[in-house]
Length: 325
Image (cartoon, rainbow, N blue to C red; front, side, top):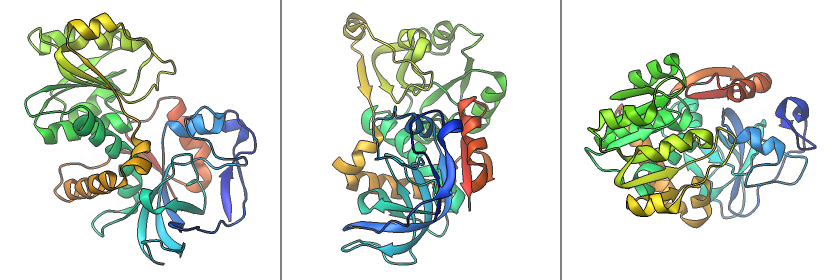
């Protein structure tokens, strides 16, 4: 089979090669999936550099979520040949003509969900659903501040925040991305490149601040983000697309009765797989009802994977980039 493979760690543009790779065999509780669509994510850049939290032995393949049909089922697998599934591979592996997926991180795809929707939904909406509801305990009529509102997890969080009945403040780095946030249903918009984000949030909330803050950005922006928090608020840390890991003064946490909450969604596959499965079914239901719909920036053929990763690296993307075979 062919796969986008890297033999050494480094920038994706230097180490990824479209090359032959042995067809893997599924083990107990696994299935081998023939790929039809793969979604690209920011962590794919880190996987290639060896900087992601999960590593697989070299030579390795990036790609964290993929859709296809079961080609082979391992012993005791709950799936059968021909099932259409989406699989999550925490350390990578889906940027390939075939990929191995564990039963606990693989889900059937209903007929009303297209391959492109399925490829774009699992990581971003799963992350946002767990971040907002399981970790952030978001309630109706609360104010939700979302950083990186036009990105994959940010756009998902806007839709899920509106579904929850919250008042959504979306922040992004330029006017084009803010226009996307408005189209998704955001109530208020902040350009954090030009606007005073703290003043804007206080203005939108009559001085109270945001009840829940959803931050996949981190970096220097966090210095402003933490000042936007209301009393008894929850600040949910999703990731660090800005590239640096910020710090938080514990006296601020104490004085505001603030909860500082982390979310590593991928770990739930090993620790609470049934929770993830129920979440996946819930998301498919919301999609059927028209309450969510993955935002697709572009769909590209598999040979253009490098181009898609470059879009993510240069922050050109709103929503998701999906590759199809």
